Image 1: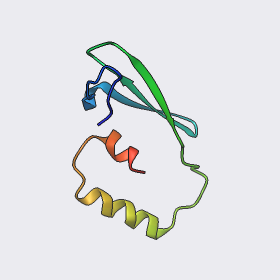
Image 2: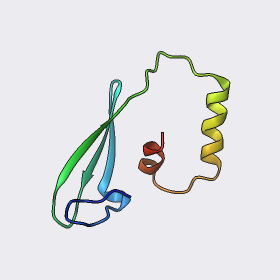
Image 3: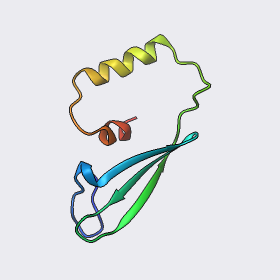
Image 4: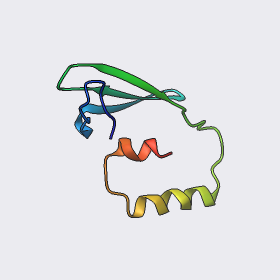
Length: 76
């Protein structure tokens, strides 16, 4: 879980994701101090082909995953 400069751990409802073309952003907002910031993540090239092994790997990770989507995206 990400932490604000004020020391508060941010709950999932304070985190949003946004995709713009090939770029992906995670936006954070601390509901205690009001600080906001964004982190740009490397986007995937959707024109690239995906192998069957890559698809199976993603499904294996999702089988037992419990948590917010933002946490799953950080692990990629």
